[in-house]
Length: 236
Image 1 (cartoon, rainbow, N blue to C red):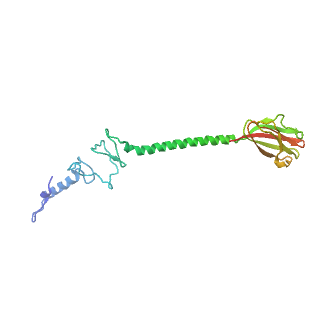
Image 2: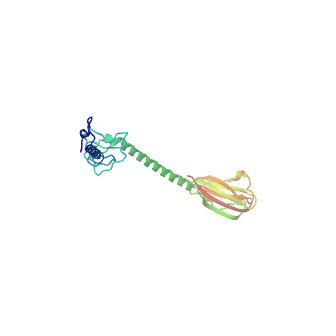
Image 3: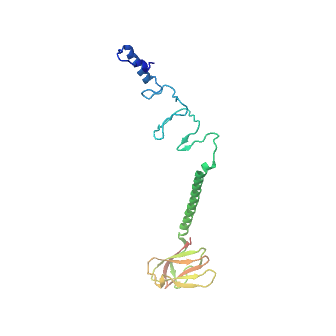
């Protein structure tokens, strides 16, 4: 390959065909025979002229992707600012303690939160289930004598909560609850609807608080045809 000295012309020297040929060969070598040509193609090994001196890219002027078959690094390799561990590299607890503690704490907190949520869900489901009215007893279109028990036997309650009574009378009538508190034999009789008569053919509902083993029955006055439905609603 011609050198720059061979292309140098002194004053008065003629430009010959040989000079043109040398000039052509030099440019051809630069374009097609360099390690990296004008078009970016690599034709030879890239070998720095000094060991561990030159950089390939910089922090703010980086190559977007690097593709290769093998990679050999004498010292270290960083990915996303963190050093990649090599075989036989020492691992220090201080390197992993803080992030590991954070991850473990987050996992424990999530587990506790999930457990609490499950417990709350179950509690809410139990609460909603317990609030559902359940049929306790009924008398439909019953010809009730005045001030006589509508149910043949007093109803012993096996729960704590409320008894809801639904009433429908053929004629205006007063509604009563006979109540025997748990552990006693004392019958307590009192009017519902604040002592006001229930209008004929008009639905009325009343809640009555009870505890387990209380007894209950109902009456009307005067005599009338009555439909009475009792529901139990257990406490949450």
